[in-house]
Image (cartoon, helix red, strand yellow):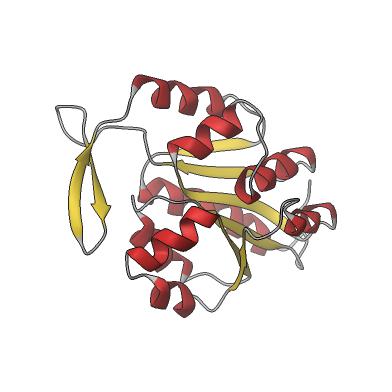
Length: 190
C-alpha cells in the first residue's frame, strides 16, 4: 500500500520501563506521530518520572480508557502508514502472538494487520545483553536491574515475527533504523 502524505505514524507504548526513556527521547525527534498508551504505560510513565518527557514530545496522546478501543477506527480511515509498539511487554507480545485484541494496544495491532498497515514491534524480552542471559532494564528512579527472559517469552517473540507485515526489532538502534526506513519511504516523492 502506498503511503499518503497525510498519513501519520501511530506509536503504542506498553507498561515496560525497558528502553522507555530512549523511546521517549526518540519520539521527541519525530513529527506527525500519535501516541497510544496502554493503562499500564500511563502508570509506568508516571512511576518512572517520565511524564514531562512524554509531554515534551508534543504529540497527541490517546489513553486506554474505552472498552471498545474507540481510537482504532483511525486505522479504518487510513490515517496511519505504520504502527510502532515500543516498548512492548511480554504480556502484550503474547496476546498479539495468539490473536488476542482485548486492550488498546492489542486492538491497534489487530486493526493494523486487518488494514494492511505494517507494524514494528520492539519486544522487551528478546536478545540477552549479558553472557548469563540477562537483559539490563531500567526500573523506577533511575535504578537498573537484571531481567532474564523466559523461554516462553522468547518463543512468543519468534511466533509474532512470523506474522505478515510485522517486523520485530531487538534494540533501540534497530528500532530507529526500522522507523527511519518507513519515514523515508513516506517522505520520498511518489
